[in-house]
Length: 345
Image 1: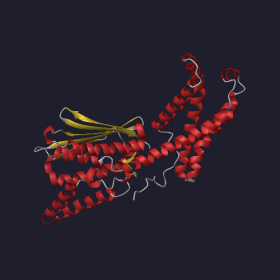
Image 2 (image 1 turned 90 degrees about the vertical axis):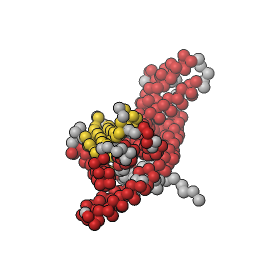
Image 3 (image 1 turned 135 degrees about the horizontal axis):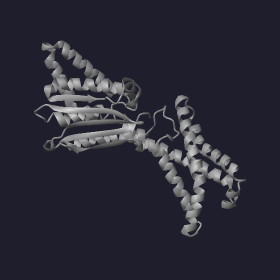
Image 4 (image 1 turned 120 degrees about the horizontal axis):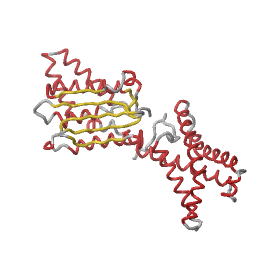
């Protein structure tokens, strides 16, 4: 029996109209539909283009104002949730109302009467209503289609994030330390418990950048006991203040899998000390995270690496759409991963 994909109960059904990906999809679709409608009239291409340029004033204005108001309406729905059917209905009613008010304002202007002598405002409002509902359904279904990438994260924990060998090796290391260094073994087990406590919670939860870094430091402390001097870590966050570290929110367990990859593919195959460098910065409204580690071409471990990176790419795609980018590659014998995503969701 299959389980129907559902969205989190506190997730509004109104699309995130502040997102660049949502805005671009809506504007491109609306303009294509407008072009096809004009082309269907059978006019020559020059007249179609001229009419489209005149119509674009109406299309862009109605679309952009609707997106702006729906963006703020979504924020209101996040603070004060209301019925799903009402959210869906408002996605159609709001564009229709904006179209009606805007066209009634323009209808007495001479250029509008000349350019659109037979314009039917009621039909335009009805079309905006249907388009608004269609876009809402599309983005809702898209979110449902992507939701397994987040909902299955806990099931993928020992595959794409915390691998079984890490758990077994950590426990064996702690057992070895119990007799000789009991206090150190106790601290290690506490860090391990904190790590898995975060791992098992819903990873759609946003966390502060400071909390994510603290979690990563706990993870690296565990690996440091096991790997000794082979593991060297350098943190660079000079471009961020301590207040930025507390205020900036990022998806939970976003940075830790990158460091686990760096340890597994960059440090473990090395017989000499290997350095992992983590750079954290902010460029305007975007957060930049760069993780580099030594690249071992003969290790033949790329498939697992790409699997974990693809998991992160899917999470970023669902949360930020095209506003987030993940890039990786080999540069000067170093494997480098770059993340860019908005500082505010």
